[in-house]
Image 1 (tube, rainbow, N blue to C red):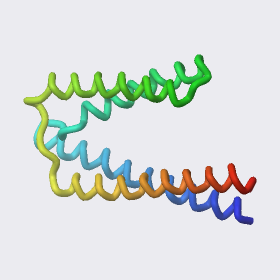
Image 2: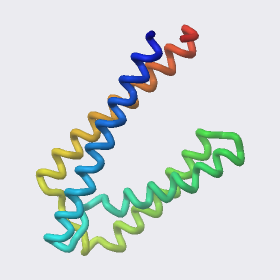
Image 3: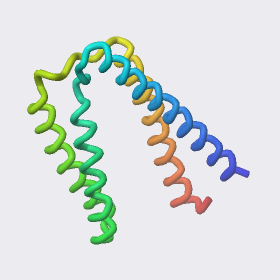
Length: 128
C-alpha cells in the first residue's frame, strides 16, 4: 500500500514537472520569435545536456555512476559557459514570466529530489 502511494506521488510530481517544462519551452519559443534572442542560460542548459549525455556512457563503462555524472557535469559546464561567452551579444535578460516559471520549476524538481532522497533512505534503512 505504501509503495503504491509513493509511486503515485512520484508520477504526479513528474507530470507537474513535464507540464511546467512544456510551458517553459513554449514561452522560450514565443520570446525568441518576438526578440530573436535566447534568454541568458540557454546555452548553459544545452552544454549541461551534452555533458550528461557524455557522462552516462562513462558511468556505465566504469561502473561508477557518481564519477560518470560528475565528469559529464564538468564537461557540460565547460561547454555551456564557453557557448554562453561566444553568444553573449545574442542573449537577452529573462522576462518576469520566465523568472516566475523558473521558480516554479525549481520548486517542483526540488520537491521531487527531496522526495527521492527520502524514499532512498526509507528503502535503505527500513527495507520498504
